[in-house]
Length: 80
Image 1 (cartoon, helix red, strand yellow):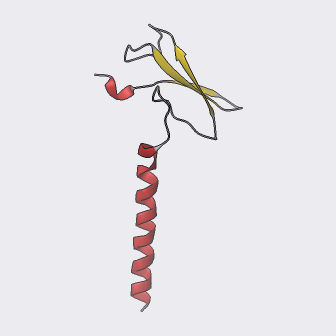
Image 2: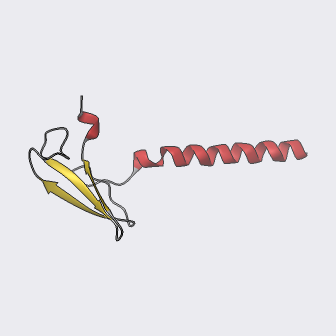
Image 3: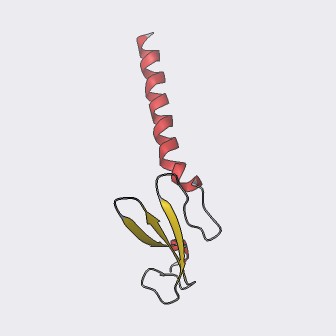
């Protein structure tokens, strides 16, 4: 009986770990492919030729928290 309970506990923990690892793939995004969240504010910036616009479409996202900010490209998967 103890072995079955231990096995079910381990399987449940593995399922939780799997769910946490794939959750970012289903994150909420806006029309410019910038992530949306309650933990930060999102700004979409149009600035062709910017250092942050790595794929050349002219757009990049700025994620701001009260402590910091981070600028990232909106479509990094398009970069070759």
